[in-house]
Structure formats: C-alpha cells, structure tokens
Image 1: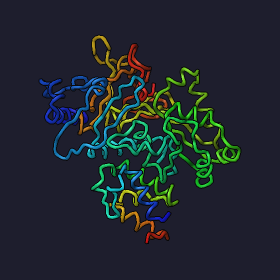
Image 2: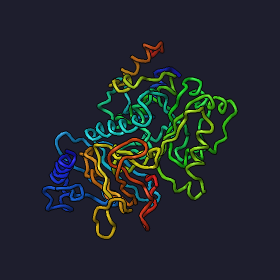
Image 3: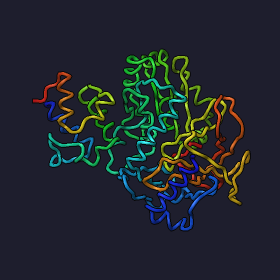
Image 4: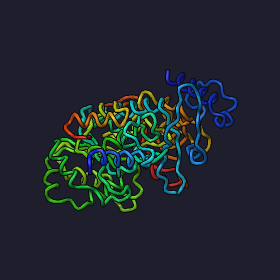
Length: 80
Length: 331
C-alpha cells in the first residue's frame, strides 16, 4: 500500500470520514471531528502508521491533510 | 476577587441560559460564596445545559462514565476549554514538576474517535498533555485492561528514564499491577522512574479489598526508586479543576476555585464538620457548571497543611448515603 493510501485510510479512520468525504486538500476547518481531541488522535495515528511522532507544536499547527504530507515528506517519506 | 468573578459568571449564565434563569430568577448579587446560585450535579444527567453568548462555540459533549446507565453530560466550549487546560496543567505541575516526559494512557485511542462526544477518562488523560512530549494509548479495547501493550511499555522504558502513566484506578490495578508483565519489560521498568496518575474511583478496589497502600506499593514496587502515585478527585461537572491527594491526605483548593461544605439538612456552610461538598470555579462559560453541589461528603479543614500548602483544603469522605454510585468520582 502506498503512503498516500495509508494516509487516506488513517484520516478517514481518525476523523470518521467516508471515502466520499475525504480529499487530499481537506482543511481542518472543514472537519467537525478535527478538534483538540482529534489532533491527538491524528498524531497518535501518524505515529502508529508512519513511525513519526509529531511534536505538540507540529500537531497543533497542522491545518490540513496537505500539512501532514509536508511534515512527513520533510522526514523522508514519499507521497507521490 | 474570586467572589466578584463568580457573581459576574453567575449573571453571565443567567443572561445566556434560559433554564438556569428559570432555576434562579431572582438572583442579583451574592455577598458570600454560600449565597451564589448553584446546581445539583444530578441535573446534568437530565439535560444538556448550554449558555449562549459572545465568543462561545460549543464543541463536544463530555460524558461521565456512569455506573447507573445515565451519564452526566457537559457541553464543552473552546473559551472555557483553554482556561480549563491551563488550570489542570498548573495544578498537576505543582505536584509532578514541569518537565515533559512520555505519557502512557490506559485507554484505547479509539476513545478519541467519537463524533460529538468525549469520555471523562480521555478528558482526564488529556489534562496531562502539557507534561508530556509524546503520548501513547496502551489498550486495544477501552474496557479491556488485560489488553495492555507491554511491548510499548518496554519500548518507552528504553527510550526515556522517566514516564508518566494515566489510568482509571481500577484499570491500573487490573491491567498494570495485576498484569502479566514479560520478564524483559519487568527488568526495564525496574530501571525507569514512573509516575502513575489515576482517578475514577475506589469502589471496584474496595470490593476487591485493595487498600491504597497495597495499590501504591504494587505499582511503585515494579519501578525505579523515586516513582510515585498521584490520586486525584474530579468531576466532569468541574472540568479543569482537579483535587490531587497531598502527602498529608488532604485535597487542596487552587486559588482560582472555592469549596464549601454544607449541612445536608439545613444547607448551612460547615467548617470541620462533615457535609455535602459544593465545588465552584470561574472557568465554565459554555454551560452553568461553574458551581455545583455534589453528592460527595467532605470536611473543610482549617489551618496550614503538613505538606506545606496553604489556603483552603478538605478531606474527601466518600459518597453521601443513598447517593448513586458514580463511575467518575474518585471516592
């Protein structure tokens, strides 16, 4: 499974989204469940799926799926 | 100062919550904490109270873990949440220090993944976030203490010489103290300083005849010297204010909160006598849970504490007779 597919599964799982609701340009402000508890859930999910643990500052500064990809890409993961 | 804030906050709720105004239609100003309008904790089981006003955006509903089938439900909001997070962090830093360390939580990460709701357990665990630099959920199944991921514990022992662990009291006992710990993890724990923080109630352990000394000894005995256990009392109806047990056996009230004890028959405030605990704080804007009469018994104690802290303190004495056995009150 590609990293993109893994991330899509993770985001859908963490934020209780259907595949129709998911987009790679989805913003935090569009997702009801992406609140402070959602931030923690997402950070734990990223750690479990990709082995990278967001710093608390990184986790709270992420404003959309594209920001997650940017951080993980900067850590050497490919999302093409 | 605090009395003035509580008067202002009471008027805020009277202005923004019709149901609250219906309960206290004639209130204008209190001259003492005992005169302030309050609600009994039981009313939060029957409706979700909400106060509307400028800057208030309601978020998830915090649900207590009831043993009766009916949970208390508190409407959280961002403005109060920010203050409540600062409050609980300040209280915990006073006892645990400000340095950050990995936080291991006896819960399933799926407890965070609920639309519109959050549990008392997750909320209590999140109060430790400011003291953590990373967070891991140890259970697969939120009620399955035996599903504890010992491999993760071992991994974190190898990574950090100090760990913070949070769990409901009974879960720490069943899952950790009574758990089957692999030998290599047991060896790693013996070299790791662990601070266990727990809340949620002693009822299940009382039924199993487990004393506080046994509980603390079983947890700390597995870990390096300097490890400790912190038991805190808190209610979902007072989110943001927690009352850890001090070394002298008392609960200290932060400067930004107040507690009174009332005679259950006359409702008069009592000092040095047991009665019903009433808890208040100025941190709740989204619903009128700023001042609640609990079903817990306590005794206000005058004078400075042996532990060195000053200010209000009380002794928690248990549930009021015939009160419902609650899942999230640490009695």
